[in-house]
Amino acid sequence: MRFSRLKTSMFIFAAFFGKGLVAQVHPSESLGRIFFESLKYRDFNTYFSQSIFSLNEQTFKFFLQTIRNQSVRDHLIKDHPIPFPADTNTSEQKWDIAFLHNWRTEWRHLSRNTTKRINSETFVPILRETDGYGFQWETVQLIAIEILLPVHWENGRFQIKGDLDLEEKQVNPRTLFIDRSITYRLRPDKSTYSRAFMIGTDPEDSDQAYDQGVVGNGSGQGDILIRFNEKTPETLFYFCPDQAGAGGPIQIKSYDDANKPNQRQDLLLTLSYGSPQRAFQILLKDILLTPIGPLFCERPEWIGEVPLPRGLNFPEF
Image 1 (cartoon, helix red, strand yellow):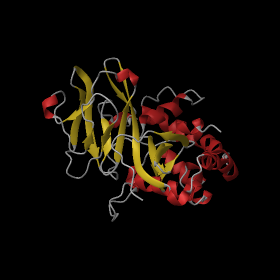
Image 2 (cartoon, rainbow, N blue to C red; image 1 turned 60 degrees about the vertical axis):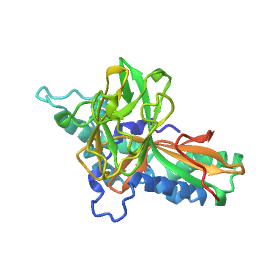
Image 3 (cartoon, rainbow, N blue to C red; image 1 turned 45 degrees about the vertical axis):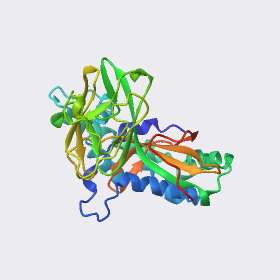
Image 4 (cartoon, rainbow, N blue to C red; image 1 turned 135 degrees about the vertical axis):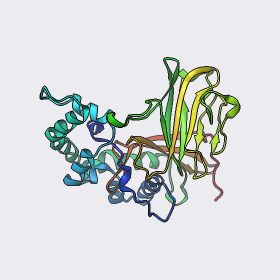
């Protein structure tokens, strides 16, 4: 089953997450733990409740209408089949018309994915894969929940997955938004070969590297891990120490700060199992914050066995 149609309706609406929460656990980390336990206990109802398919019609309508993501809006505007009135000049005006005409179509595509279909085509296949490795779930441990950000090199600069803010509020499109209290794994691909990725307090100065909460900063090889906290400055910079103009600003935000674009993010879960212990991974694609919490919107991908990723250790039993 393909969920690609849902990409027109994905966004994060962080304002729904109240600042009065007692525990300082990022909602996406909570999602990762709940997802893991739904597999561990073969609990499909919980698994389903963590997906966008659990939304009812009115919740979905509000979810889509309040989108703060120019990339997603542009996609739906482009697919709008009726010419816009001549006096429709702004993206906001076009969005109002496109949403009004198309939200029910998006809902119908969403609602076609029944619980039976989700179970047979996404939940059962993951359990089948784990059964193939002989998983005894009582001894499987969840050792990492991370937001995975692919890093690519193109046109003389780093390209990092992200979505634009609304047109009227748009900041530098190179700006990287990072939440506090959750780990990000930046994964450079082959195009970045020999180009070190560095984070610092100055846009270009490698002597001002910022290493607190960063693993692999400027090493030029392997993944870079980031986990910022309340002591991290609100603004940092990413750059290549060997080539000017390759990076941009980093804005560090609390997860409940609504003053940021609503972004689709991939959540990487790393599991430990076996004797000797081995590492396995599952990727939850396009995680969004919604009125009922973070949800995954694409088919979860069973990656399978992997070398123990950088920065992780096997837990002691």
